[in-house]
Image 1: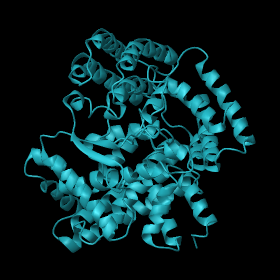
Image 2: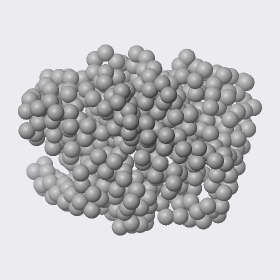
Image 3: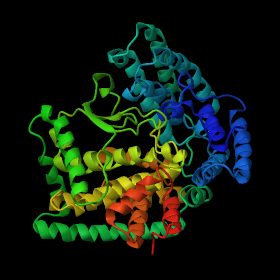
Image 4: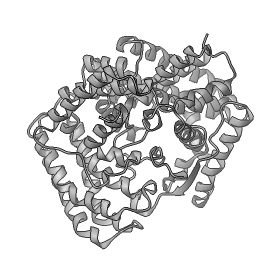
Length: 527
């Protein structure tokens, strides 16, 4: 034992080497997660040792101890009740993004030997993953997602990986073997017995109370979210009536898609323009101090990734590897033959504000100054989500909160764009209802999809994948709305300026919002 954080990260990276690659930890890029007889029991043994150490440790930073304890407790419960190794979509995600992580700009200069090693490891890893699943029941939607991802990755390995600038002929044979392994894995999933995707009330309560440190239980959260969903609907009707009484809010928001760049070759510059405008507006109105010393480079998505970006968890913006961030991040501008997909309202709110400029990009840059070592890396986007889910209330809460914050900069949004923001708030409240309702047993998958399609505000093409995401990551989607509500509550209690509040909020890095509340209170900043 060298130190609690060091040993915890060693444990984490041993079992999740793909996370290590995304986070920027050296020495793991050639590996995929270990699988096989006894692997779950061995990981549980290590977790129990670490939990005992957390209870006795007096040296590590308090935030790190708190986060490690929560992560370990939740993972211990998951490994006993629904281990990730039994989820075929976890296997395709780790195998696929174990490779893709090494092909993204954040991994340059290209480590050809590591890429070749991970390619060679894919067939054995997928075979071991299939053996782990055996004939056990698995939620059908998880199998469908895994099969879709596997077939998409097979196509990438057979055709598109050769378009990558680092392509080596030495990869050709292992890439073809890996493609065959993905296809075989997908085919093997048919006919598995179905299982209930709900994690159950006990695990849900553990996630809410321990990982996210929320004071309210599932039933109270559902009540609050339902009230917010209904309130947002009424506010949308009122906002629409003030703009155009003859057109409902849904129609007015849909009309925003007609405002976009005139030509495709203007899109990347369009993103850059609104990123700069968001930074300027936040500065001029003293809302928050934007990051100024870490670059954000908007680029068109390279051809090698264009066919896989849609079907996979391929984000246009990924948090930089906290342990090796370099001088800046890349923001992919996704190709689209329909310019309405690059409409002004979405570029401003989602790309320039939520993810870029003062949103995740500033948050990630500021996190590197956190006193907590986990607080510097917890929000790293890995194969299927954040490295440390406990940070979601602050991470996604901030990015959604800052969308609304820019509405306080006079003239940044139009009245119709503010209505779009209100629809986002309503949709986030809808996600709480599905997320918590599904895992508490109140809603089924089909009921959840029907609600999203009829009332939730999601595009029809996204409905199924959103519910599958809800089912795989209990309470994760709920943190968007819960995080915003928590930040708003803290701001109401804050005794200083708006800018000072937001700058202090970001100074703690990627930690649960409750840690921020406790620190602000301890420093006498809250009423």
